[in-house]
Length: 250
Image (cartoon, rainbow, N blue to C red; front, side, top):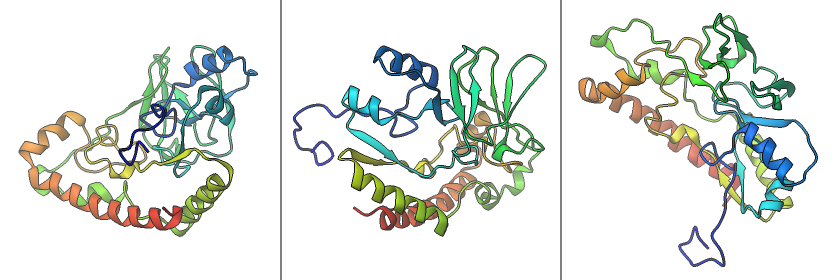
């Protein structure tokens, strides 16, 4: 009813169905404890912000109305699979994907790598004592007279593969059968100019303007470059949106 601009019986509540409505893993662990649920490691569904996977028992106890439907691929380009134990700085025990591989620098900060490839430069850093990662700027030397939108886009955005569409179709069918919650589709590739994605967390050697400060200035200094990137991204996003809708249905 809310989506259709009708007056519902109550305000709809969302927790954890998207990357912008999530809950920090350590906070979620304390929430489970406050709800009287058995202690168990928290699954980190988004390793960038270190957001927890919100479980059905928590959804039920809190009266949540939504559940997310998205690919299992993280912003770092590796999948949420092959879970393994890990521990946050505050001692919270969590589960992270198998390719969530960190190294500690000389100052005690934790470094995370694109695609889990430690031979590539790290793309994010969790400060010592912190709770989530910050993107690392890895901008290479660029020739501002030959900025190429295609070069920026090609390693970061792509049309859904048959394997990805099968995953979405099966996930949607499972949710349709087993829940009456509202399905929220997460479609982060459609976020034009999302500053969190500018450094290219999932790209081993990102090309073009990748420094967020330079990116913002480029809107005035190199408008055709920015427009070119957005045009290419839009074409891919529209294709994916159509494919997504075909896969999951209405």
